[in-house]
Image (cartoon, rainbow, N blue to C red; front, side, top):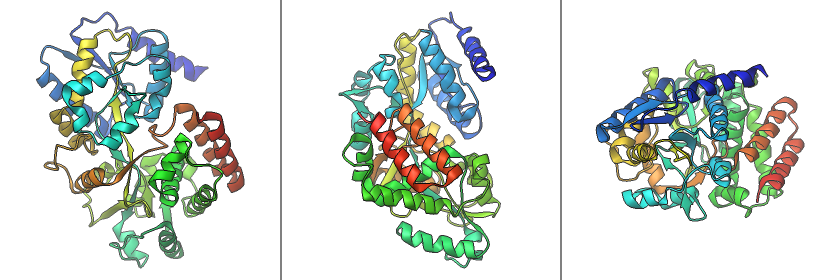
Amino acid sequence: MKSWLAVLAVAMTVVGCGGAPDTDVEVFTWWANGSERAGLDALVTVFEEQHPGLTFVNGAVAGGAGSTARDVLNYRMGAGDPPDTFQAHAGKELTDYILGNRVQDLKGLYDENGWSSVFPEQLLQLLTVDGKIYSVPSNVHRANVVWGNADVLTRAGLDMESRPENLDDWFVQLDRIKAAGIVPLAIGKDWTQVHLLEVVLLARLGANDYTGLFDGRTDWRSPAVAGAVADFARLMSYTNSDFQFLDWEAATQLVIDGKAAYNVMGDWAEVVFREQDWRYDVDYIAFPVPGTADEFDFLADSFTLPVGARDEGGARAWLETVGSVEGQKAFNIAKGSIPARTDIGTDGFGPYQTTAIASYMSDDIVPSLAHGAATPVRWLADITAAVRQFGTKQDVAALTAALIAAAEQNRS
């Protein structure tokens, strides 16, 4: 009750700023700190240059890695007081809002701005629902990335330039690291474990069968899925014992501090290494999760046009900035992600981002499970609960059964 009252208080505070003139455009995000806030600030600068008659109103709500913001947003949408535009992960995370007629189709805006010719076809397919598109991606992150401490790998007797081709090769490396008395794989609490599960499923099933898990083409009861779940459980045996108490930043810090060799995390982690003044491919390394070298496991922050927005014209202007060359370049250089557009090039981006841009333009693009692209919110919640239970009981059979049940209950 106290938690809900706190959320309600925040919501009422935000709602209380209503009655703003039409030149005010309220942009609702959870970007309140760090590289996310830096990216937002850069995007706002471009917005104000492109639309000098409009005033950006920051509706950011901090806390809970976006969970607090989503609670506040749900309250406001239910109360009929939506912001002019709000941040969401692109893909199936928007399902409930789409089915509830809470967000508007933006296909016309795509046509007006030529976005269908500059966003990859695979991305457009993942954004399209019954011929309509409900959000504009501001960026793209890659989820299937392994981050490693070069010095730790050297201490364990490994060549830091060696890249295991598949999970079996990686298990050999992890055994050597463990024998050297070092934690092989740092991980955090439940959602980071779901993140690990998704990349293992991708590594063992491949792009087509992995995406089939979410649209009905692949059976969750298949031996391939059972084998992938067993691989996930094996990887969890290489992790730090306090994983249930850490979030992703703390898990990544174990790698930076030399207490662990590897971490599997999306490429927002790259900013953390750069903040340490570490050099890419010298002090730290990054490579696709073994077995996924030809896949780009994507998630994207995106913006919507809610039904009932107070300043629909201002919201459309914000969306135009989000999708523009100038907006995408400024935002992503600051945030550490890469543009969703393919016509921007690599000038101004760091060495890791340059490799990610190349992969994004050539690899198979698949939707992230842990970050809202692959499933509706309720299905992901069921999977997260199953993974959390596994973290406590380490029961592979129970995890497999729970994943099957979640698919049967949620997949249409």
